[in-house]
Image (tube, rainbow, N blue to C red; front, top):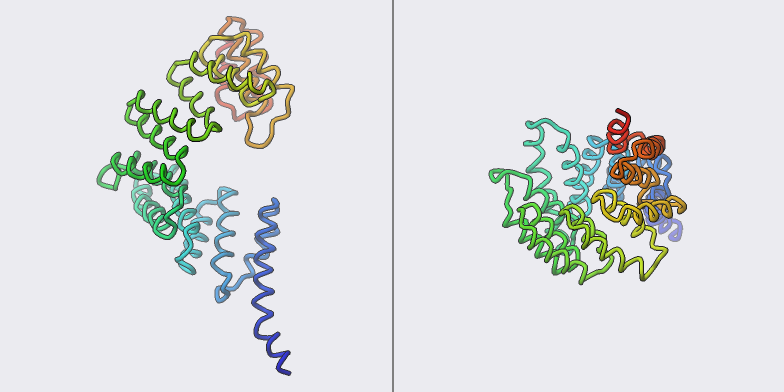
Amino acid sequence: MRFLVIIFLFFPGALFCQVVQKAKTLYENGKPDEAVKILEAVNDDSKEYAEAQFYLGRIAFDKQNLDDAADYFEEATEANNKVAAYFEYLGNTYGMIARDANVVRQGFLAPKMKAAWEKAIELDPKIIGARISLIQYYLQAPGFMGGSVDKAFETARQIVKLDPALGHRQLGIIYEHEKKIPEAEKEYLAMVAADAKYQIVLINFYTLQSKPDKAFALLDQLLQKNPDDMISAYQYGKVAAISGKQLDRGEQYLKKYLAYTPKENEPSHAGAYLRLGMIWEKRGNKPQAKKNYQAAVKLDKSLKEAQEGLSRVSK
């Protein structure tokens, strides 16, 4: 009898924990709808309720059901106010909602998102994502709502201590925002010195600052080390398309990229056709430019640059 009592007291909680873990696994394996069915069954008197609400919020956020996501994350923070991730995601969701909201609602959401990110940092002093979000808030919000370039710099310097490369990147972003380009370049160089994987960020900076020769020099180094570096090949074509320089090599690298199957989060073939269209347009060959812009639009109808290019060369 005593053994049965022990089972009765302890087995249900352990089993329920396994159920919530199963829902997490389903979500992480790309089966959110199945996860939702499990998570919605978690009662508010369960010790797993906050975590269930958090993952329901994650799923709603992924589906861009932002108001629902905010409700779930709010519920999670109320059920357990000791988890930094709950507050970080809540702040992120408020920010996404505010992006497309009217001025009145933006004013209502601004202090809530700021408070959520600050709470996340309070709970986890090593958290970085919430700090990056706060930097954007400080740069975009008016002073009477807590905007402050000085606070943005202070927060970026905190990140430098946690992750030097990311911290210097944020400092570079702030200097760019302040139109202090030499200072921004210095920070981006420090970023690459701390972690070479961020070279593409520096390359994009040089491209946007109309310094293609510096961008090409970095890309040449990367491609000499690894001729099959497809991301650098794409970037070479992109810099060529934007700058109007090294058009022949840019075309070659883009064609090479089109023979490659991009992985998730890598530039798409639609993007490569867009850049080829730009290269042919800069050469003054409208028929070839049109052909490539059409290929880009066929693959991705939402690619605005390709649609605009197609409109230009079709006149």
